[in-house]
Length: 375
Image 1 (cartoon, rainbow, N blue to C red):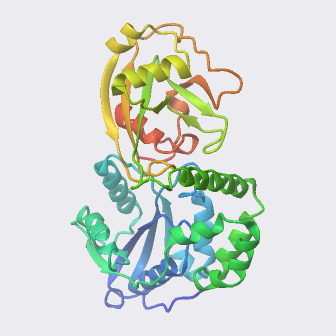
Image 2: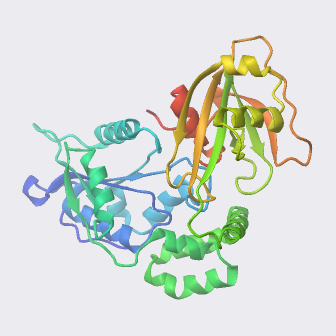
Image 3: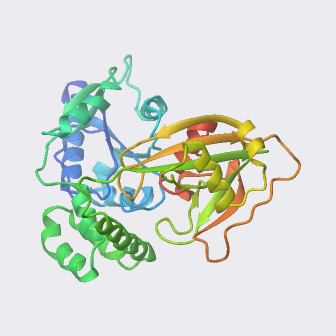
């Protein structure tokens, strides 16, 4: 555990601290020395540091393998008692297709946590590392908060969380050797210990299996003259406070809910592909003319990291069926099908129960918020 030099502290005089509160936003998948260096700088320059942890309730995936609680424990293990008393670590729900929702969540969390100062508003700023290709993306996010100053934190060359994840989900002996050697140059010792413990969990084993499937999937397209672009469709079918979902029975996303859907065939229009998937995949007992008459909206979902396959665009169609006492019957493709269909109450939906970005697709059409996110 580190103890950053206490230029600021809770009892410091006004002129001893540049800021009352510094805000650091990240996913920390996992926490590395670069993250810790920025938090140390923030602790030196502000009385209070708010760490907003993004993707807080996403289902485990190769891109988001660690839960909010796990990442919180990683962060706190890097600091001593005094520093931890000045760190506020707060979950932040993604809003992939609505920047305004995400900005509002950040604003409200900072407003509610930042400690008021006598006779004046608290001095608040955002802190982060900007370097090279990161500048454009960082500048974009900073532009969403013109009411706050921006502070450039230290940049550590080679501190790339995606590269660390590539190693973590490789062959076990390689991971253990890496944690004992090269990993110590990138990770605080306490985080390395957390990852050693993670190797013993079934969650790690499941993600390693997903990594193996992903590598096979990419190998199948390795001879393509350019990176493939996939087009899929999804159906958001709602009736009487319930939504039609499937439960994935195999990796990736084994056990997670997913919207019915699939790939578009070469001779199909998008809506026809969506109706075919409802007919073939879940055997929805609703006549096609009724489905077409219930269509209330459609949208393209194109977040670059939305799918484990790579660049995959999804056109989603929203069907609002007329309320009835009985929900339409379903019949899956058989006991060997990768997916099992069911109606799920809207109140039971949470981001960490849904595959890929499907919660956010539903959120886009229905305006839902996660129960845990306290919007």
